[in-house]
Length: 274
Image 1 (cartoon, helix red, strand yellow):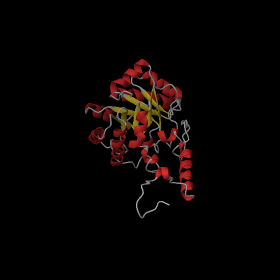
Image 2 (cartoon, helix red, strand yellow):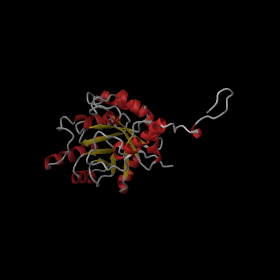
Image 3 (cartoon, helix red, strand yellow):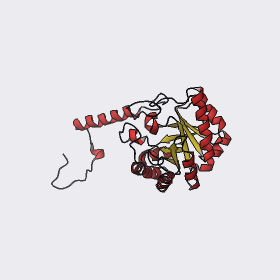
Image 4 (cartoon, helix red, strand yellow):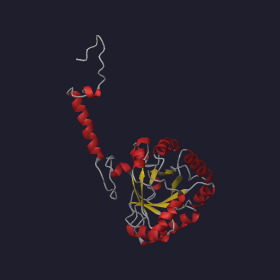
């Protein structure tokens, strides 16, 4: 059985040059499968809005929805470090809201919380002072993608790349123990990773980061609405699942399922089985 990471382990892995992995999970069964794997970190991401709830973006996701998914996920993965996403509107109004909602996430089973944007350094510091570990998130920030012109690569010019590096330094100074960078050029992610003493978790950020992050339903080919460029599809489970469902339908239609093996066959007087 694997040993669960702790917050100090993140700095330790960084210092040792040890790379690790993170996947999303949103329910007990999926979390238990991730827990059985070598994966180190689960992010209960607000991406559940698109993947699980069918929203067009992460913006509509509520705290109640996040907590409802976080609780069973944490139960399913006791040996995996759990990061809960603070959804849009739960931390950007004021610091008190951020602390209150982050506390709810910790009570629901998170080991840390994640929030988006380099402008929330004061919020990060306040949440950390409240005793709650914080992961920052820079680059493409889906909650504010409309301000960025959509889901586009960030840091593609020298000026914007330097801005990302400065923001990364700022969130580290504010007390974040790890940083997610999303959809940034690999050279920019490399510079950020070298600059920081905290580990950088990359999703669509190239090979030089400390940890690779993917959405589980993307990398297993389960989510069919779209596939980001940075996703490697390790399996095509959607096709396999559809094939299994069709096989079940065909066997049922033909009277081939269930056979005696899958039936209760005790003889009952007056009730023949044939």
